[in-house]
Length: 119
View (cartoon, rainbow, N blue to C red):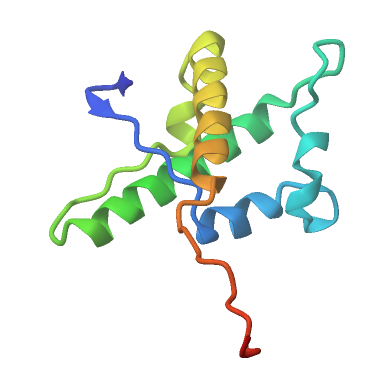
């Protein structure tokens, strides 16, 4: 997705988890479902949505900077995101939630533990 002439880079890193947990009740990331209710009858706090997307954008840009030395990061800030139309913020929320799911998947394969007993 391209916005304001630049690619949207989002990442759900350990740093993002720490920052997002501050948006959750009792600073508990496991309670994230309470700030993004699944049913459409519950109100959605756009201020939290904008902060959530801003956090993922910051860490997406930071991750890229570490992967590509010399990369000049330019995350989307809360102030900038507040100028976008609601439908764009909704698209970014969906992209952010998708990023969280993808970045939370296990990517390291492990071998089963070997028995120390000799047979």
